[in-house]
Length: 44
Length: 444
Image (cartoon, rainbow over all chains, first blue to last red; front, side):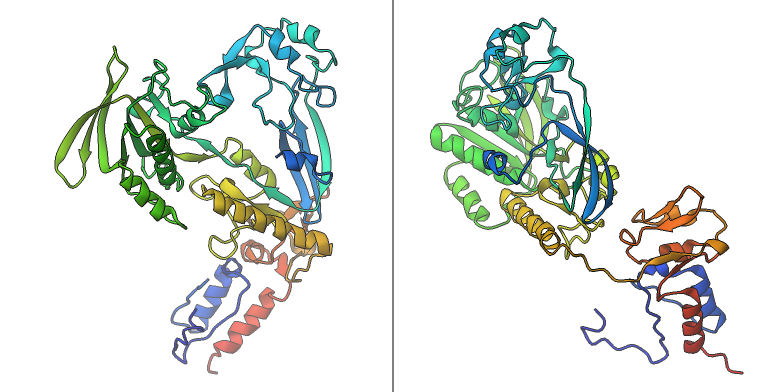
């Protein structure tokens, strides 16, 4: 959706592709925080 | 139905229940329980000799209990297969029918049978049932009937041969009230809209009006929902024909014990008026419910239900025919109440969807599938519970096994596993570790 409407997002955003939001585990989220991410957005 | 019966590629297993489904697209193994009907399908010719011999009368369920039939009878004139059907609960086992039968088709010793069949794809079309609560005196007051009972009364092969007669005294009701949304759009019963009842009220009131122009018909509604092709025009024509549509809130209904007429108090919304009117008959547009065996069929086939109790499609907007199990499709009201045209469209869609893999004899899938690693597995079996597709099973040696055809590659098992003993091909944990580390470098 964001792509089709040509939505802009800040350059500080990093995207991680997952097959399904179910694949996202606590360890992945914590790793991102541990490495300095200010927030994690799980979008599906 | 008769056409389906005559088609050599179609086998009808009537009066049967699906008790178990195993396997996957192309290789479903289905166990069907053939309920004992005590009449042999091969031997019965539908001659009706048993019906004449039977001394017991029971309510006719096909006529919504508005008429009587014999305990052994053919369910209705067009029934397929056209063989006798025994209402076993009311049978007194006098065996008069057994003596009357020339072909020795009636066998009271018949047992339920389980048969196993192999099929490639499955279309679920289990339909709907009618809500029959005691709202507005239904079940107590004789002249409060449902739309389906009215359908039977208006049917040429119905209990009154198509003549409009009310149940209490078999006289023509002149003043008729239709009440819409009974058991629907109500948080105490069913939240959903049953979709078809508005048009059903329009149709039946219009039918009565054209046959008996001196009728006085009032339709009380919450909202008239006549969406769809040509339905709004149909509704307008009904209003022009003199049928009164009132946005009304029904207060109370009381039966006059002598005349069996119904005194109705209702508020006409927007007018501040309480109306008190007497009607000869009240027709309830009762809600549509998921059919009786929907829960069983959902658990047997491992398909989901929506909060309204109907079967759930894979995606409400983009994939309304497939279920989450590849190879099982939905058609008609089992997925949610719908008008005939939509049910036909969906059935044709389901037939095409099932036909494509059957014709190709090939099913293509992605190879993103869960892979268990037994050495790391602590046997907590959390993955078995977490899998929404029931693709993970435990074998005889207590080892986790993934059915790669049922598996849809969502990765929930991998996220759930505390000991990282199950991996999703191409989306493994160490790949994500590297991925995130690379995206978020820590300045040394």
